[in-house]
Image 1 (tube, rainbow, N blue to C red):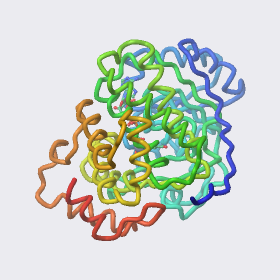
Image 2 (cartoon, rainbow, N blue to C red):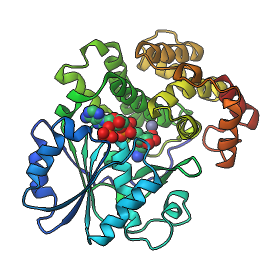
Image 3 (cartoon, helix red, strand yellow):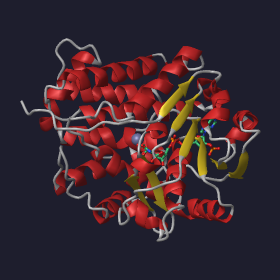
Length: 382
Ligand code: NZQ
Ligand code: ZN
């Protein structure tokens, strides 16, 4: 069996979890900070989160910037960067879901970079400095609140890309499960599936004998599977609290240390959002089963392990485990094909493939590579 890879792990994000955690903002944000409060389309105004956050920051200098879209665009975030510069702000507080958290990281990095903002996203500029970032999470899904990743879309070219910037990793994250009361069912299901696939990307590869990482990944997957099985209890406090913590742990980095990682599902699924605006979680329920089927031989051992440890099957087959994953998505009302997400365009697959090719994902290289034909079958199948 291959040994673990060497790794260095440091996650400095301080998490404040609990129903009264907004109050901590008053001291978490330095008293003399000049704060940009970055938010999305206004859900925080409708559900009272904005009022509670501004109350906690009543003694602080705060400038607001709203309108960050789901799948935040370079164009909008660049306007936020201009506000930061004009008003000499020095602390970025994102209040929202993954889109706002990612946007906050971009703004924090771009404010200290004189070149084109897209250089940061494309990797042309490696971020070494950023303004301090804090996050008040309103949608558990991405794990963005305590990781170093951010995904930004350039609307002009319909390119959606991820970049990593340790300097922009949030200093703190407020995880208040009460904020979930206003989340539509659709976003709860999206978040659950996103978190589930995040763990899969770090677990469903080949065995390296990582007892701790595997055990922890399985614990998080089992928790998410239980939440899917009990989706009718989604408005009860313990259900939401578990989703919030599971989604955080799924992508805070701890599960993936020292083990092979995949990310093919994410890299290919992202093109569906870029072209057709399909919610991130839904692109994953569409793409991931096809990725798993194409790469089934390489993943067979871990799929069988997942069948035993997560789905409780006595003698699992890899094929049966993929079917169980699909059944779970189906039970949550998630689409398994692009047409179920409303895409009727005849050559949708051709366009997705062209975009994936332009981003260097055909063939897909990585721990679980897919050759050109396999990538094409994934996209045409989906
Ligand atoms: O814009 P607002 O008004 O805030 O409304 C949002 C948005 O319409 C709404 N919402 C959020 N919290 C709410 C709420 N509505 C009612 N009550 C609340 N408490 O939900 C909608 C979706 O929000 P968004 O932030 O877009 O969703 P999510 O958290 O799923 O984030 C998706 C983005 O994160 C990226 C995705 O690609 C996508 O751009 N990802 C980031 C990752 C990372 N940084 O590590 C990893 C992920 O794989 C993902 O790629
Ligand atoms: Zn994701």
